[in-house]
Amino acid sequence: MIYLDNAATTFPKPASVLHDLSVCVGRYCGNPGRSSHRLSLRAAEEIYRTREEVASLLSFPKPENIVFTENATYALNLAIKTTVPHGAHVIVSDMEHNAVMRPLEKLRRTDGVRISVFRTDGNLAENMESVLRDDTSVIVSTLCGNVSGERVPLDVLSEIRGRHPGIRLIVDASQAIGHEEINLRKTPCDILCAPGHKGLFGIQGCGFAVFCDEKVRDSFIEGGSGSDSESPEMPDYLPDRYEAGTLPTPAIVTLGSGIRYLKKIGMKEIRERLSSYSERLYDRLTSIAGIRPLARSDSGVISFTYGDCPSSKIADALDRRGICTRSGLHCAPAAHRKFGTTETGAVRASLSVMNTEREIDGFADALCDIIAGGI
Image (cartoon, rainbow, N blue to C red; front, side):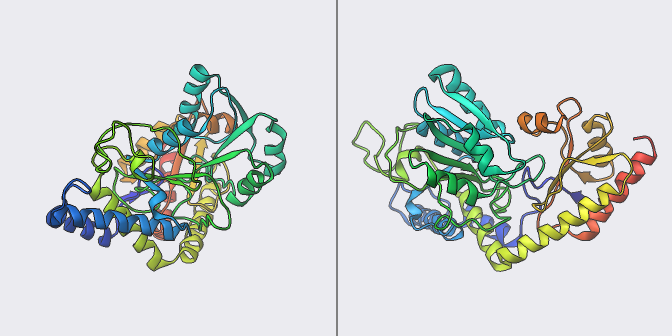
């Protein structure tokens, strides 16, 4: 099997991640923060260790401001719905995932929020400034498009935020984290949201939101927090304010383990390897008659079309040969409108550092055969 669907979730997981998962579930997986016995305390310690790993990865000084969620979608809903004021003006990129656009659409209908879109091609700073207004309150942007793999540099987003101190910046790092260095000291934002199961190699069931400011926002979901239990309201401090209910301890533990795995490789090596793999993948795709990559990318994500052939037909043919890709609109119709692929969708091949050049060549050779056989 050749697995090229890492933008959805990485597979396989590193051996060290699977080992730590087994130890967690088999030896100490008590309920963190709910009891004082040794299994509960060990689980709580491992969860805090993962907060420290995330903070270290992002050069962020406050592990307690890292809130664990079910996934990146939950984190983005939390960030958007506790930050965007009633009737606010929000600007977003032209590549946003539905995890951003659907929460904003709901706020548009219920709270009168107004939304403007900035282009990511050309001069990004100028494009953003052109849609900013006096009443703009929030910028929400991906750092890497999940369809095309194109990057939206955090340093540019952060610079725009710095020019307009009243604007808050929420970033979706779902496709960027684990693939490139993110330094929140050098390029600050207000909230960074990410999953644990993609570039960080954790298992499904955990994401997080990094709250970089000290603003106390409304609670998002209420319930047991293991702290201030006598109060009818959620605690007014992080992370407890937003971590109602039992945390997914095994998923959080594997997130920490995945980060340690990446640190052993080194972000420089990861970036260089993904860039090299992406270049090879792009070159092989462009050499196949009729194949149109949507964009050149060094992030490990490249999507393509073949004439007016439905993307699902190509992906199904690849699957029959043991090659896993993803077809369709990738939960990001805004990006497909940008590329004119809403009718056919696109086939996405997404890489991780665990792929090989041989797998890339095997995928391209299989695609050639499929096209030559009339699909």
